Length: 270
Image (cartoon, rainbow, N blue to C red; front, side):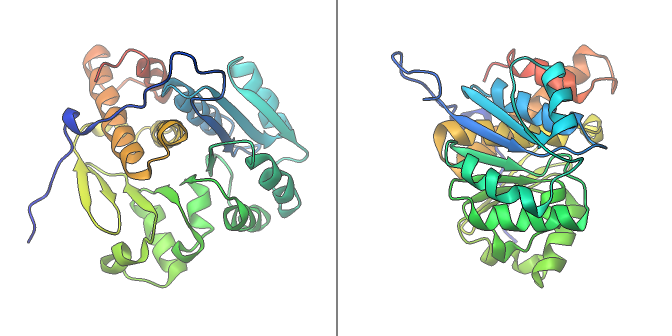
């Protein structure tokens, strides 16, 4: 049995930027998600992407969700779509919009209506730029449908993805192609077709709602700047957990929230 390899600070490589760069040169993220039942998830992921250092995040969401996100933060640009949730009819506009971005993040707060699943399949099949696929979007897909992406499931979502794909968990690595799987757990597991590494930062408070949305946003933000799937996954997993550990001490227990994590990102030194 191979010895587990764990991430350390020395493994992190944060994106730099040129002194003479302009707005948008350091990463543009299109965050697609939200529904009438879940507003906060896409806002958390969008803000986490911005806090990673990228220049621009546009949240594409159903209109009432998008207006709520606009009220939550003036830093997020919003693109508003008619209806209470995404449907297949929205896919064409999202695909066209994605051409102006470095990364598309999809899944946070989408919900699991069949129309929304069809929307996800169409978007993932057609978008050309790298993607981060999280939450409800994972449940709509097969691994065979995904290309050039970071996939960020917890164990339950992974089991659904495997079932949809018709493959066993022991065989997942050979089916990843050019994707990275970031499996959330007590120790996050980062898997490519060639290698596996673990991140043991984090604590039991990370089970709180929204912490996974922050992780997905960090993945997207780092990826938009570096265009490196593996390094972005490692950076995001380690830093997300480290922020949880810092807040555990600051709050003297498990009272910290996902929104606290977003605020803490800018104070982290690595």
